[in-house]
Length: 163
Image 1 (cartoon, one colour):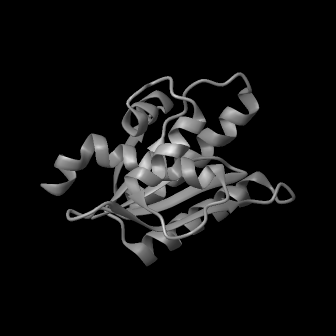
Image 2: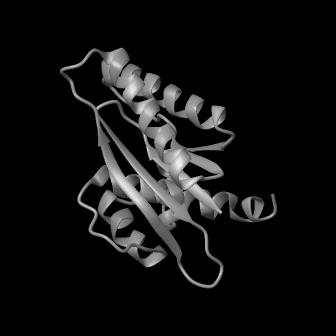
Image 3: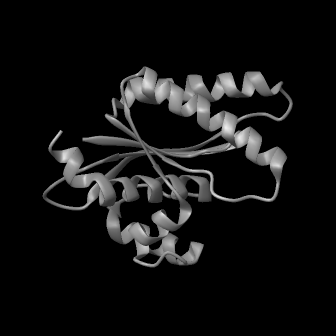
């Protein structure tokens, strides 16, 4: 079973594909930080996000999408852009037959660390203990996507196994 996990944005999108294993730790089979250019019109950035997500779905064939819910922000311009990018991502996943699961930042923190007010550093330090990562991850966005995928496995694992 594979999960496509996304930390949504419109400038930077954290992406991870996680494979559930039953004999050992789960495996990170792909991760990246996809970036769009501020020099192109916003609709084209949204198109590029959709095309990238579709390419990853076709290559890795995940069954599920785990994505972060928008939580709270004071910057309305940013939240609107991220909402639109999220919409493109969720649409692309649904169009390709993926089941969509959404999680808030406190849910992610609880799933990964056991504490809903954990610091970002606490979350990041737990990730290598929970999943096999065979590459250096340089982007916080990528690590956030991995944490979102781990949350999906923690919250939905039994359901996903018995689909």
